[in-house]
Image (cartoon, rainbow, N blue to C red; front, side):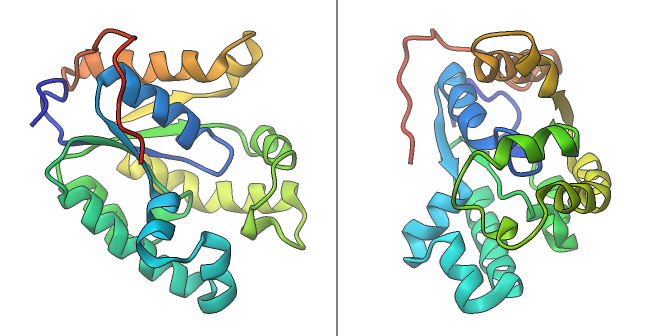
Length: 199
């Protein structure tokens, strides 16, 4: 096991869509010198179906089952990693138990629903947004999921202040994540020029 992750085998980023789990996760992985795994990308690589394809073919329930199987596999992997989880991974109680019971460190990237809704409207390929009002959807998701994110989280990092502070907000968020993990004694940094595997 990498000595950069002193306690946990994995660091898992959770939060609503638009919070930065993928972009921030890649930067956290680089700072720690471990690989990054985007759960949605990994699901497509293993099954040949994108998230949108899963929703179209199996509905949300089918997608959630596949997502749960993938989470179990990723958390059991012996190779240390930073995992960008799907936004709805906390919906299932079994997933919340897995996140809390496997020794991973879970980081909640928290953003207010209105702020995140404005961000994701600028990006394509969001199956949950199709035919729905983003502001209302985010309000509903936040009301339901925020308690679950906090239930599983070892660390909560606020994303909005970093976006409002100026340039390179994702790097600032990543630095805040690693600072919090260092304070917990979970990790140590590597030189910023070190490369990591991204899959």
